[in-house]
Length: 440
Image (cartoon, rainbow, N blue to C red):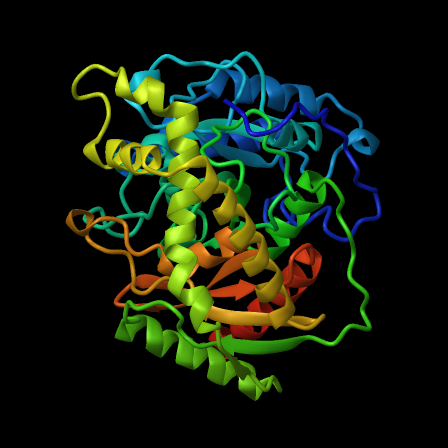
């Protein structure tokens, strides 16, 4: 069930765009078939223990690679030959898309989701479907952390994040309805991008909440995100080079305590940025927003979950639906239509206030997670640092900023609504500064 009307893919790239070569620059010269065959071999070998992919599409990927190799150079798209992984809540023609649930085992859609089709039209090669948690919300997938099999890769874009963290693909599609791109990307040490609400088409992906669902990207670098964003965005825009960049630091607005490994890594990151000339003035979320944001998110999500999927989930055979997911449906059943409409109005007001908190050219910095990847037995971690930006629709991105005991730590960057290009340029600059520090 989709949240949006079908949108026809419409490539909008230009041959002189500076992001064109980003995803291809890390590859040695080779045919697309050689590149994809190598990616498939690595993915097949590592997936035996990582369990990031629910299925690899070797035949389809190699067929597509041969088609791309037959093209003349002037017909290459900006993502020519780039292997990409697809979260199993996003339709890929003929491939498994069970939404992480045994209820939908065997579901293989006939067509591609709009955003996947845009990647394919730009030359990308889907090589497989990555695991999602149940309905992208509840019971964990079988995927483990790429650095420690006893730890969680995060949820619900767990398979996509683990595939990136293991170096199996340079680009993957994910979704976020609460924190499901930013958190797993931070845990697995990769870049995760949740764009402004509505920036990417949602046709052909699981719809949980038309008010909260965000398709997005996981990638090996900010440049990779920028290249894919230019293909995916309905209205990609460039940023004026005359706009100065200002970074501000959000004071923690959530009740959970940020762990020492994360705090120390962020402190080092902020110190590095101050050394590069940024003032990093503090920024505080208003208390009345803090008091209601978790409840509003739950109201919007559970009401729509119950309305859209409740009948299917209630009728499921015993053992086919987790207690956690059914509890969410039951909470949604208790929400009246009047309260839902009130929550929509509150959401809009909060979005406007948070957007006004940042001036043009300003980007906020915050923890991406409260801790490093937790043990599997402890769950997939807190959604609190990511939730507010999903509720408000503001764009957010996580960058790896360090490691503690071999586990990655991420910093979250938040931009103004609709100013995704500015956020991405800011993230690229921060990434460059941090990379220089690590190489010194």
